[in-house]
Amino acid sequence: MATILRSLSYRYQWLYDTISRLAALSVGGERRFRELALTGLTLTPETKILDLCCGSGQATSVLVEYSQNVTGLDASPLSLKRAQNNVPQAQYVEGFAENMPFTDHSFDLVHTSAALHEMNPEQLQQILNEVYRVLKPGGIFTLVDFHSPTNPIFWPGVAMFLWLFETETAWQLLETDMVQLLSQIGFNVNPPKLYAGGSLQVIHGVKP
Image (cartoon, rainbow, N blue to C red; front, side):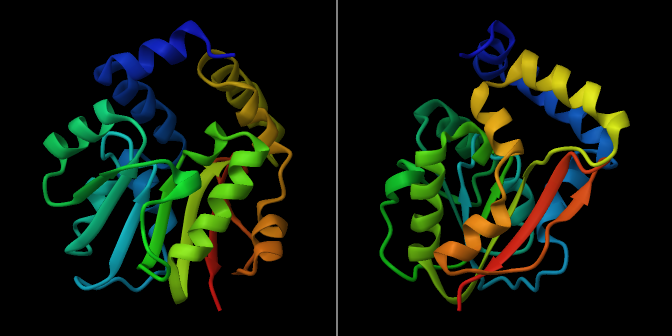
């Protein structure tokens, strides 16, 4: 069940942006947060990138600095309108992540930032299968999202944030072994890189 603060944060862009910036302080700021999932990757202007669940283009604005072939996908017309205004260098497509309107082997890189925790387990499985489908062989899926904190000092802050702004699906993600899930689909996956006391995970999965 969504909280009032969650609903308000999506209705008012300034509130969402403020929350995002405050949360990103734990890893050194919003710019640092947006680049976590790109660390160690080799990107060129020709790299075909899908920003999955792009929202209003917060991560897209960083991706277009690396590539001239960035596509943002989101199910919300309002978010896509904001993204188009914020980051006009990218292309945008309205659609559901569970059933992407793209052909097989369309992208070199699929990126998603703080979006998978919005999905229930069935949706998550469908989305990951779709990511595998639209990636080219040798393509990379990179994600950053919540993780169960390994440092107990971070638990109160994470719990408070989830209670105020998230739903039960975020709690479910904390209990999900994403590496195992991706491996079962067929990705080659290394252990996640953890940040902010283990409360954030970055995972790179390679499609053979």
